[in-house]
Length: 619
Image (cartoon, rainbow, N blue to C red; front, side):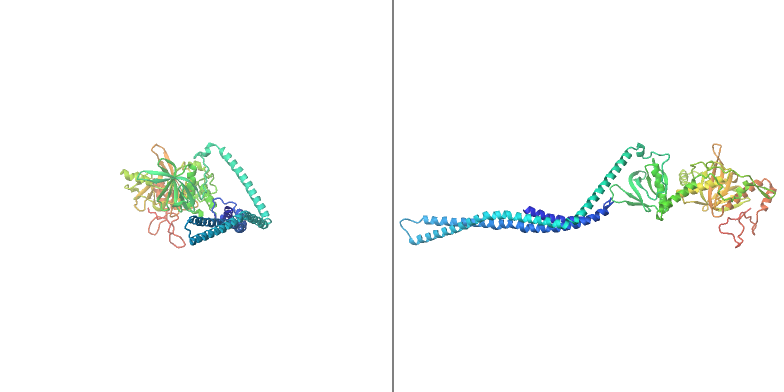
């Protein structure tokens, strides 16, 4: 009965704790919490039901304590203790009687002392009376115990039965009506969840079968090397990469870690870590593919100030290019726009259109530079007679697909090797340090322009200026795609014999092109500050190579084209002194006697040349 009562008390405590736990379910942080709203509301209702049940269990526990446990405890503590006490008293009375009888038995026969005899007799009589009384009380208690034990057995069970009946009656009255509809709705909800579970399990089994039926090539890291499907519009990326760590002066180790982008940050989370840590800020950074040791698919992230950063390795060409594209998009801070996905798609489409060969140049505005005017028309009796329309070649006929682009005049690696060799550096562009150019002293034309080198690339033809426009398009697109913003500033000296690129700081000639080797030159038709020219150079094998050089000028590119055109005309007419004199007379003079080029005339509005006008020529 104590165990029953203890179990009932435990039930009260358990239902109380259960109610609290049901309310605390919504505070638990589950990784998968889909559909928990319905469950949370249902558990709240169940918590109220458990609270009400707890009240009934508490009342039942109290009733069991009063009607079941208390009677049996009273029987044990009162009745059994009383019988045990009377038994002890009866034993003490019997011992006293035995002692008094022993004294009475030792009385002598001859010399009898009446006084002693009388005292012993009285003592025996008192002991017998006391023994008789205690025995009667003990026997009466034993007789009464036979009845009390039966009552003590029946009364607790009666109390237990009444308590349980009252518990069930009150529970039935409390929940029979309100709980039926609720329990049926909960049963329906559980059944629907079970149906969804079976459907999801079937769907997952089908997906597993589909995955197992795929070819082994799908699991190969780089199975489609030739034409991988690359998503260039990513604004976030995650996956495993190998991080290069330097362990010594010449030794390195590679560690495979999980990387992911978060906003404008590149994060890394090692195995077993709870969260990721910041590796590098990607805002305004630059990223490019690099050759690193004997590993493939490596790329390097550089800081905005140009310092080399971390080197990472992807597992395939597709992953490598997608990481580079994603970091490029993030470095432009596209993620801060309202619709970053659309902005990324638009920027990449623009870049792809820029490098996609255009089969027709008919849509271009017709604003030919002086070089175009020379080759598209003939001058007869001071009248311009247009030539027949020229067929525009395809882009593939102008520049071979995949032609590399050089973005700097002198590569840092070349300078490093030259310094270590200790010998005289030979620049492929013809740069020299100690050579003098005597032709500049007696040149009829000297024109200086401030330009910035954008890039150069090999071309297939120099028959049309369209090859310059295509080279401009590909150079600018490549700079935009690879986030290349550095440009080398130089002074472009146009003389009647050569084109010279001079370092503005050291006055060292970086490159020298004979004017006779310049076969085409043109300015961009929309961006007037872009200019380019094609140079034909002999090769060691006996053949000739064609290269296009693209520059951005502080002044209009038309002025540079006019200067080059004038230099080539001077070369042509130098053979005929009269024609040369006629040409020089056609060039206007300034007040101080210097020759000025076309479009260098002072502005009629303010009477002074603009800041971006080219320097005056000297003859």
